[in-house]
Image 1 (spheres, helix red, strand yellow):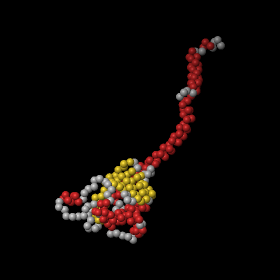
Image 2 (cartoon, one colour; image 1 turned 135 degrees about the vertical axis):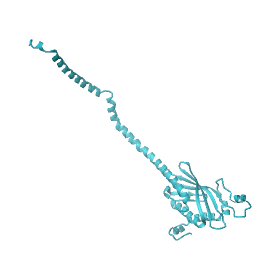
Image 3 (tube, helix red, strand yellow; image 1 turned 90 degrees about the vertical axis):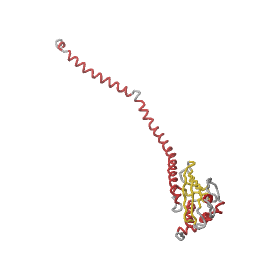
Image 4 (cartoon, helix red, strand yellow; image 1 turned 180 degrees about the vertical axis):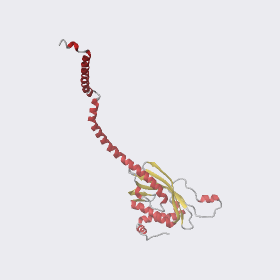
Amino acid sequence: MAFLLPNLSPPLLLQSKSKEKPTHQTLSQSQTKPNNSLSPLSLPSSLTTLHTPLAEKSAQLNTPGDAQDKQPKDDFYVNLGLAVRTLREDLPLIFTKDLNYDIYRDDITFKDPLNTFTGIENYKLIFWALRFHGRILFREISLEVYRIWQPSENVILIRWNLKGVPRVPWEAKGQFQGTSRYKLDRNGKIYEHKVDNLAFNFPQPLKPAASVLDLVAACPASPNPTFLWGPVDRHSSSWVEFYRAVRKTLDDQEGYLLAQDGLVTCS
């Protein structure tokens, strides 16, 4: 044995030591890994997984409420835009075609300075009577929209001008302006239509004119919107008959039904 030990060369000893060193390193690494898993960086992830369901539940609880609050507003603005576009297209054609009644509620109320009517059927009847009697009493009749605006979110105002040429030869062309005020509910549907601020402009009976100034003075403008029912009786009987005929149609719906069946015609 004493003879063999001195023959061990130093390189073999170094190799044996080098083989032991990786074992020490792997042990040290395996010891450090559990410590890393318990490091403070790993703790918030475990806590996050515990609290995530609570956050999701709170988000789910808040989202439907926000969606419910947002949906009526979206419906209102969509229906509001539809109402403005429909009114802009329908009003200039009220004497030639029927309206689009999808923008109105079934319990809509119509008001003018003298009368009030309620219900979509009465509302339809009003515009049918305007078309029917307008063709009977006037050679030409039309409505022009001057302006559409919103003084508040749930109100639409339309300033218009109605003009017509009566069929009777002794009456000259007349016109008057008015304002239609439409009120909308929370869903954007029109539940009230009020006509006011009427300004009449009916010419005096025709007479020989001495100058151009006399012709201009015969048809004075009405710059200030106001309620003027008195001058109508004096200056334009066709317009009075037109209003009375529409009013009578609403009182007596039988004539409306006959006309709908094609039994009443007009040229």
